Length: 321
Image (cartoon, one colour):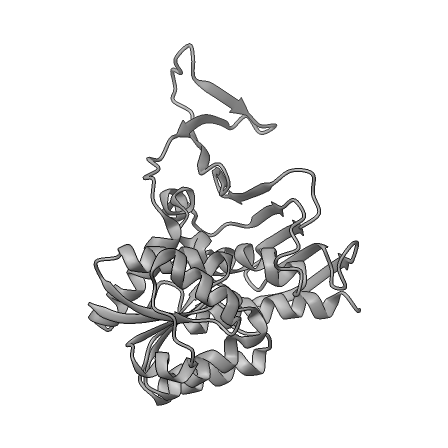
């Protein structure tokens, strides 16, 4: 079992602590949180060991799970990596691109592994259909959330939209060509609503919308590709797959047939991929343990997390253009 320590005992940190404590792949050594009052409360309530010194905790483990505010990700990860520890870092990987790129160098220099917590990669709906998403040419995403003061320390792009940025980059095998975006600050000092249009070198276009002041929650992505339309509902964990094929010469009474102006007939049919219920946060932590033990590339490597951050920051920068 890998010895693991958690940095940060806030809302998400407590979830990580519980899952790591239940895991058969990790041994939870303890946690550190700079808020001593909250930390002692968590330790008393759940029985986890509280370390008053961050360095002492890092020294005692094989893996450091960083669930702190984004502004401290780099400092925490650098301390851990320089001690030869593997790191799991909640998204976004860091606050700046320079910080992320330095972590990439440190990861290589100290021969450790890192994974970024882009949890939607482990969403069962996404897992069920990602193998069918091939060369999409138009993508549309909506990630809307009701207002929650937690997370408003960063723009909505880094808080919410980055999930969709990462998922799209994992599916589109092409470099980004151009980005146009707009953002509006409504209640926070940073943008609460954002829309971005990403054009890729291969012609694919992705239109992303994110809001954290919506009246209802929504997390949907739609992928349009040759002969197929695929919809993923990350919130409800549902998928819709609509495909087209050449129509049979003698279609059945219930076959859905379309005919274009040139007389070409296509049959529309639906597929229902099996969705296997899971705990996405538990799965991302467990697969990271597998990557460490098997010396393989993590599902969401620090390099991929850095690429998602780079695009997110390009979107934010384009707000000012």
